[in-house]
Length: 410
Image (tube, rainbow, N blue to C red):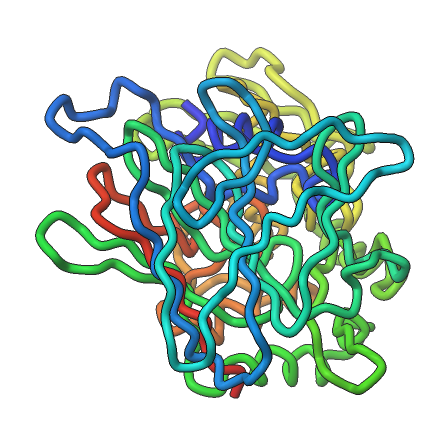
């Protein structure tokens, strides 16, 4: 199947939030993964809530505000959890959007920790520095911050979020840069044997390393960085949002895309989307503006229009990946190959060896620089960064405790 993480994570993302970042990047909850219930060990009973400890090692003096927002997977209700893990459904929204109830939880001061409870739902834990976030409700649900819009009320607030799913099969929690690179943090889970698995930490100096790499990259990549009027750096937008906001040229990947299209006009791209099914292969050839994929019997199973950069960065539009067993798995493989620019160096995809990633001069420099600055090399810098297991995700079927660490900015 389509990789349990992406298949059911996409289902969860479809109901968690109505608008905001996810609208522009449909797979932005990539790490909030959910396995099939058949995978649940009978003896691993996950409690209704588990503790989540947030530790503030940021070095910043501003107050921190926490939000635990999401969807109950059993009912589809959207809402928030208080510090005790009690779920509260959102009230009805309006048009124009109405203010949401204050769901904030006081976070830890610098050098301190607080522990809250996580209920069984799929959602996000937001954290902001110095100012509460402004959430609104429409008739369709929660409006998330969309800071690529200069008029968004959260535009000048320093914040970030993690994504998670907790259900009877366990906990999946990830750090994410699918929509933006901002306030650094890491996530972790304590296992039954007492050990802790973590991911998301930057290398020493990694925060500035990412920003400086974008500043020095020609072609408009520096324009992804947003600051507020006092000069404080707030974030770097993901390149898809950069295209949408006009800060990154829409044709930034055209040269590479054109070379790929030309290459596979006269040769074949072989996609083997499932690691445990090596005999399931699809064969892509370009005819005009279309790449057709056939199965081993020679039957055309799906076709892709020539993508633009926005389709590549967002893994949507011309690279849409439905939750099926053919188009979706092929699309996610293509998306990873385009973002990592491995499609010209390897006609057999997916290419999962990081030594060959981002080697073309025309590539996703945002993803390249983030991965280069992560202490374990793992990140969710684009929607299908989990192809080959390069995503910043930790999970366990019997979690004892979860962690979020707010890391230093230097």
